[in-house]
Amino acid sequence: MTQLWTTLDLLEATGGAIDVPFGANGVSIDTRTLRPGDLFVALIGEGRDGHAFVPEALAKGAAGAMVHRGAPSGSRVLRVDDTLAALARLGGFARMRTNAKVVAVTGSVGKTTTKEMLRTVLSAFGPTHAAEASYNNQWGLPLTLARMPREAAFCVAEIGMNHPGEIAPLARLARPHVAVITTVEKAHLGYLGSIEAIADEKAAIMTGLEPGGVAVLPLDSPLFPRLRDAAGKARAMTFGTSQGATGRLMEMQADADGSGILAEIAGHEVRFRLNAPGRHMAMNAMAALTAAHALGLDPQAAARALAGFIPLSGRGARRKLALPAGTALLLDESYNGNGASMRAALDVLRLQPATRRIAVLGDMLELGAAGPSEHAGLAEAVTQSADLLFACGPLMRNLFDAVPAHLRGAHAGDSAALAPIVVQAVMAGDAILVKGSLGSRMKRVVDALDSLAAITEGAA
Image (cartoon, rainbow, N blue to C red; front, side, top):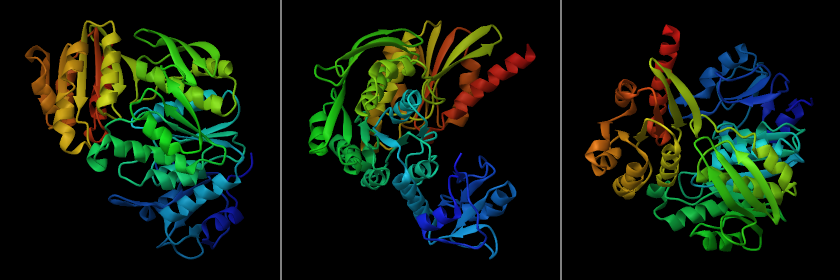
């Protein structure tokens, strides 16, 4: 395999200087996951300066480190003006030199799952590189590009935002051949102010499209006309259930474990099993298959490949918990939460054949003044889907008070306080949904349930 970054490449890409020449076969920003041969990039983040970890990185086998201060002369360092800016230049250089077809995905809900579906599909057609986890911000997108192997035939990038103006520069860096917008919902409403402003920010992904590129848009969205207008002269393909969609969901036979799907992709009828339950997952699949078609790939082969998709931890992963009297089912949706994704996850909970359906829900953040009403507005969905609600955080108090009294399990101010309460309450036969914004730290509840199961298995 060709070396990812030679000394000359590193110098040309970043404009930096190297004392002791070195090349690298990977790029890392975290010594905990660094592999021998990686270039360690010393980024400065909230409360942590990567420069302090350079000695550790080198001791663990890093090929060298990218720094903008503090390294002694004569060491294996790449000196740059600013490590974050130089990482962006490194990503831009990787994008410039690649022959890979690039797909970029954004959206209020479903972007990471759609990215992973595309990874599954495109891997059936050639070497595919995709973002890890939710690496979609000002360091995550450049890092994804900088890690792209020279041999890649496809690259799937994810682009996210919290504030206005964040998507356009990332889109211009990625320069996608296909840009996908999964949904437009009331996420980050506190920072953007209106659903229309959210749509405009998501639409900014299309400003980075390569000449002749394709925008893949959600036809069923009320904001579709606004998105289509923003696409301008760019070629657009659509997905949804509506007549005329390029990727159209025609039939869906849902069960607790997934869905049997009949779809039409640009006039080609495809049938496949999606091993991820819920209508929202089927819509993500339509977006992925439409993007694959936009790349000129065979819809039948793409649909067959998609049958191998497995949901990620924190985003719909399902697992059995061994308890003293039997098993319970955990639905791990702990990574994020907004109104649309909460309702979608509750729909999946309702499908589960369980003795009790338990919803453990954490605050949905970044909603601004709409926060209390958005939380209380989930009461009907919870009432229809759950037998018991455990709520976490001050905003979720609005939901806890809005549901009927017989559904109220407990409310706690944070996930650390709620986790032991949930552990005490669960029983064999339960289906337990855990969901909330990342900042609500609902993974603490997931970890506590996993630990309970591990202790039970150890005792057995």
